[in-house]
Amino acid sequence: MNFRNIDWDSLFSYSTIKIVRIRDKRLGILHFAFLIGIILYIIVGTIFLQKKYLTLESPIGSIRTSLQSPSVKPTDLPYCLKNGSDTSYDGYPNKPCQYWDEYLVLYPPSEESSMFITTRCTQETQSTVNGCNLSEPTCVYNTTSSSDFYIANVENFTILLDHTLSAPTLGIQYNAIQLEGQLLDGDGKPMSLPPPNIVGVKGSPDIMSLQGILTAAGVESLDSQGLANKSRTIRDDGILILCFITYSNTYTYNTGNYQYTYQFKLVQNTKFKIVEPVFTKDVEDRYIFDRHGVRIIFIQTGQLGQFDFQTMLLTFVSGIGLVTAASLIVDIIATRIMPQRNRYQELKFQDSSVDTQKTPTNDHTPLLNDDAINSEISYQNNSYEK
Image (cartoon, rainbow, N blue to C red; front, top):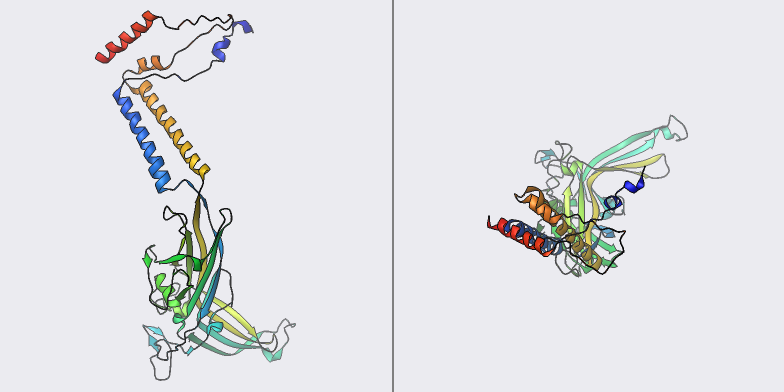
């Protein structure tokens, strides 16, 4: 192979940018429209609407709940079975009622990010058969008594919600009592509840009754038809509700305004129950509380933001990339699609050969002489007149 015959200049040629003014209003208007669209996208779309000048962080936090029984205990509850009273209510059988306080209704007594409120309970008393010992493989429990009852007036129990948010990277930390909040319905629209419900009042803890939570979740009452078993009520079968606590400081252009929202969503086709064993003297004697009720799971979510110059700079750099893409599209249209594409290609792309073996001199001879330049200008003018 003869390396002397290789055109090294062509092999290692360098392509540089050449600026050619194409006096064609169609291409100019198209390029100008692209630029206007890109500017509007960056300023209006990304900066003002999407707030891409903010660095964002999803907050973490903790939730504390407590349950309080109402001070007034009504006796004329339509779902409670009493001597001489109706045996059914809205087509569903009534059951005896017991007036439990918050310590009996809430099980387990404390949970992280969730709570369970008992609405119906089946209580069984059990003992081992003939007092047998559980070390014997044949020893089993025998139910000596059983009762099934509703928890009276449980929908009027109130729940205190206290929660905190923290964004460690941004250095943000607040307690809910320091912020304003809102309650949203199932469609995400603000809603309000009558007293004793208190939601989103700065300086005051959030308090909601169980009936208020059911209303926010789209449930009319505990005596509505069950979700998993149509022959039972929600009071009888239990339900599962998700509570989304969403934090934000980007809902306005002032990132110093923080707020949170509650949104309760009912999980369809579900019921919920917990079985609680309570041992008395020893493991051979026990009570079984088969609890059905309302399970509420709290989920903290949202986004918090702070102004960050580097984030804003990256947004503008991405816009510069769009400008380059717009110029490339116009170039392709000019050199590949336009009727004058051949001439535009000649003007845009030019090969230049330089003899690198010669000693450089101060003689800067132009690539085109005056006659060639005048000829080129005359040719372009004749083209535009046509």
